[in-house]
Amino acid sequence: MAQTIMVTYASQTGNTKQVAEAIADELGVSAVPMEAADPSQAECIAVGFWVHAGKPCEEATRFLESLAGKKVFLFGTMGAKPSEEHAILSARAARDMIAERNLLLGQFICQGKLADTIQKEVTTLVRFPYGEPVTLTRDMMADSASHPDAADLEAARQEARKAFAKVRR
Image (cartoon, rainbow, N blue to C red; front, side, top):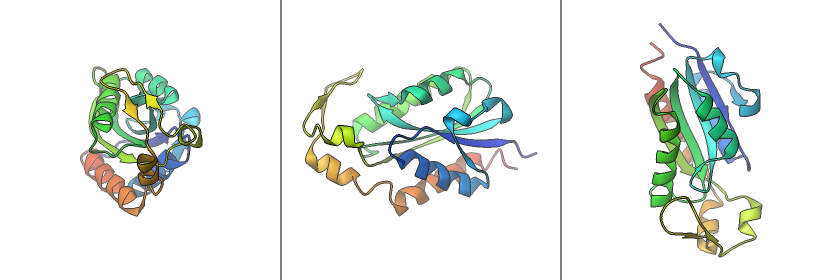
């Protein structure tokens, strides 16, 4: 029996909203801004966030910590490449927020254009709750400027399709 699915997101620059809309389209539902989402209305939830200081943004952190008994697909956007240590640790931080009270269906993270406020501070050291400070460079900002792109959105769709395949039967 198919289960009720919700796609919700918090987006600062529009990156996460783009990914949310691609995932929602793939799943045949609407993407709902997090402030309007009622998690009690769904058994399965795709939760999107932008990464801030090595973890989901504040709004998404509160939302994730409120979930219990849900099947959750996590997706996020950030300035770093998904293969970099910062992205890997940020994804782990999101998983840790839901691990004890929910079932993780899958996860997707992609690069996204950095917010204007960050771009103005070009070579700042940003300290995260783990590891070494990350230096934001012009190259990193230039590389992130074109994301999420069509390939990122297609990868998000594929990951969501795979994650929700078992619950949509």
